[in-house]
Length: 280
Length: 357
Ligand SMILES: Nc1ncnc2c1ncn2[C@@H]1O[C@H](COP(=O)(O)OP(=O)(O)OP(=O)(O)O)[C@@H](O)[C@H]1O
Ligand SMILES: [Mg+2]
Image 1 (tube, helix red, strand yellow):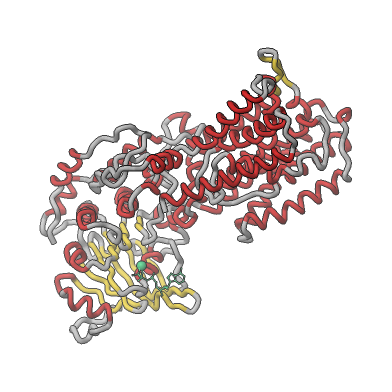
Image 2: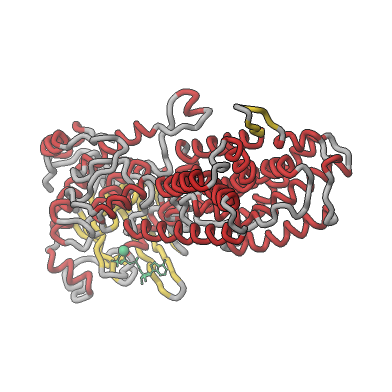
């Protein structure tokens, strides 16, 4: 729940020791169709140990569909998925969570009538110790509230004073904060964020960026979907460019500038023109 | 790539104000001022029982002033006896409505369960204890059937239970041959919940005690267990619940089965209440149970409500019936008033639901 400060310090060094070319998740020729709409058209995907990978693309390029396949929310119609090098099928979000893959969905996936703490612990509630927990199945609400408060504080959500209040009484940005805090608190293998700053103000967006860095500093790779180019170029190590359901390029952030990335994304330029190998 | 220092965050954390009270409501968005109406709405959102309690207190005061016979302990016990069966069915109904479902078959399941109890014990001569358990299990089986239709066939609960309402009711008439088992033939165990004890010169029944206990148990379960939280989550936002790793079909299935169990027990309560086993007694309780839930402030759209609200809702219906008839009004005015209460309760719920969306 709390940030491991030693890892954070280590991450502060120029060469992060936990970085490697080992792939944490790999997707091969993933296809996802909705009726006659092809959301994913044999797209490839990879994220390396310890990196921040940005996924960019136009609206409808298949970014959300892609990460939904990685988080078990939907099942690809074709293609292979490897987690930690092993061929895996994620039949449900439960299975992805069990593997340590934690996701902030674009739809946020929060339950408005439940309070903040219940939302953060939804699906993995803490029970009391002793017979209260084992026989009477009693939830440890106090502990969940404390830890939820810690997770929210880490995001700097000062306006949120009470983790016992229902999520529907929160602003859009605060709700997003709840979803992000939940992923940050539980992600152990990969944290996936689908447009986590879309509803946030400048200050709050900055906090999320910092949180991404913090999560990453713990050695956890992060997949960030965003339309905010400066933000991406600030945090990401590599950029995955999705277009018309495919990955058309996968480049080091340092090897490309913002203008070219956008040009690729909207189809104004091709990877060949930029001297990039077509990824796949 | 520069990594941010962690010390800045430490500073921020130190400046975060501790929550004032762990359960109190706070002002949102930098402490925007709320109008009195908004303030009341926010309160009602976090304390859904405020509405039903206010209605009940108001009715109790008015009827006590109007008719001197109303405000007695004896009358209160009578009201509770009259509404206990509806209230118990209301527990099952609340669980299902919280998942954004509805069960139109609760009374039919109850009748089928009690007819099976009677058939096994009276016509077939099984020991009453065994017949009772088997009858309750019929309730469980009916609940499981409803749950399977909803989760496996993906049929909306309204339609699923409209169908099973007919099926279970028809089976009930078939098994009973449309005939009642008279009091003299009903085993004592079956009517035990109708017997009672004296407190302060007033008779209370074991059935009333059982009803209250069931409410306390389910209030605890909904409030303090993960299953309870999951019931709310499923009804509130099904997709979010699924994405949060809740096995939504498993939760739905378990809710229908537990509802069936409660209804099976209610069959026992019904026999105690009326003394005989009638295949048609309480057939109107399908809708009456929904009325109790709605007046109790639980949202028909799911995810919002309290089990104790249903007890209040059932008691409110009983209080209005008793109060209006003691004041000399015709029965039709009870129906009329209940209609207004239902619409009023749903109107309030609609308004509250808009706040957060
Ligand atoms: N559940 C669904 N049912 C039908 N079509 C869908 C569904 N989800 C996605 N699609 C379609 O698949 C395509 C890709 O959608 P997706 O949400 O993955 O895009 P995206 O890149 O995340 O876009 P955005 O930037 O707008 O979030 C779109 O054409 C969309 O209409
Ligand atoms: Mg998207």
